[in-house]
Amino acid sequence: MTVSDILQYIEELAPSYMKMDWDNVGLLCGDSRQEVTRILVALDPFEDVCREAKEAGAQLIVTHHPLIFAPCKSVTEETSVGRAIRYLCKNDISAINAHTNLDCAPGGVNDVLASRLGLSEVQVVAPEGKDAQGRDWGLLRRGVVEEQTLDTFLAQVKERLGCPGLRYVDGGKPVHQVAVGGGACGSELMDAVGAGCDTFVTSDVKYNQFWDARDLGINLIDAGHFYTENPVTAMLAEKLTERFPEIETLISKKHGDCMKFF
Image (cartoon, rainbow, N blue to C red; front, top):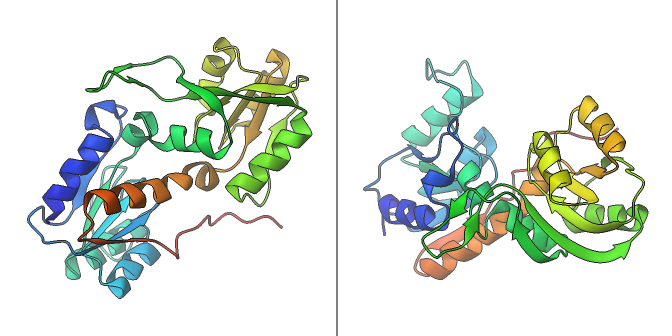
């Protein structure tokens, strides 16, 4: 198996046509012809993950976030991205990512998040189109939970995602119809409202978005960027193992959220 084989399968799981226009996905570093016997899966392709890949004997890292996001004007030791790229190149390690395409894809980030939070009757909010299998795809998901108080649901979110804490605003309603958007989806608040949801779980919520949610009467929960997206790494590892049983697929033990609570 080669990097190209893995890339082709990732394209099946999360077709690149589902990505946002500004995004950067696919093979961002390495050689598509390189043989692969071990893969390291992580949320982020930061330096510690790159070094972990070398220590684990992996020829490929598969991540959600891209190694190169903003335009890269130089590759030097002066920046963390430059150091990561140089390290991967020196050690013949390739890097593939599926970012917003994996957010939008059926079975991707937001379906995994919905499942982790116990949502049933899950649907795509504002579908962008249908995939090759005729399934709706798009960014947000909505589903239902047994009606409960906001405090009860908050405790479940914190436990099921392993969050050290939550930011939230009480919209004044019990929790039943829930929208989810892993990562920075606060700008999709009106889509959650339009879908008839009383609760929206996402991350990186801005100050004014909390006020907007309170005024609109929707519970808004910020569970953290890492914690709302990290569950997808287990799914990726599982899918890669099923498709390529001859390749050892590992989940990073070093990636994590750099933000801490005091």
